[in-house]
Length: 169
Image 1: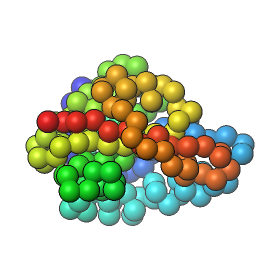
Image 2: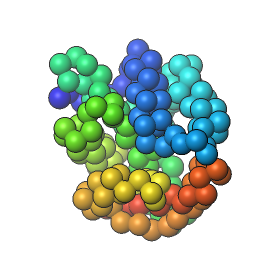
Image 3: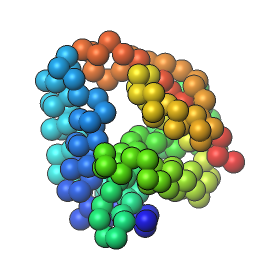
Image 4: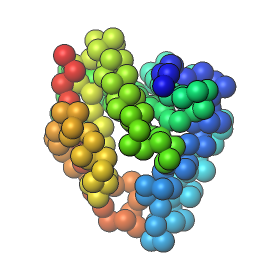
């Protein structure tokens, strides 16, 4: 597996995997319209290209034998709990669904932690859907702890996001 910073040319593959991973993890009949509308926006090619070019956003991609298998998107958003500290938010860590459990997620997490250290951040944080037990367990295995909760993105789900953080010093 090879990890590298994303380039503008990666936008279509990021969009494709992002949509597939998101649909696999979150789409249900109750939130279908809301999710598909969201995906049309967040994974439109122009939007992804603009995000890759933004100075305060970092994309990391992972390939295996020149096949694009996933990405992590990080930004410098800081929650109120950590005001005054320099933190990096793991906005997304998405894999092609067929790659889950093969080490790519761990490799992206390790690269995300290293990026946070390189950027002199004291913490890495994220939001994860409470009902996504596999993801919650994955993040806990990396030392992440819950520090807050908020309503999830899709109203139809009536779900909660867990806000988790980890010290990266």
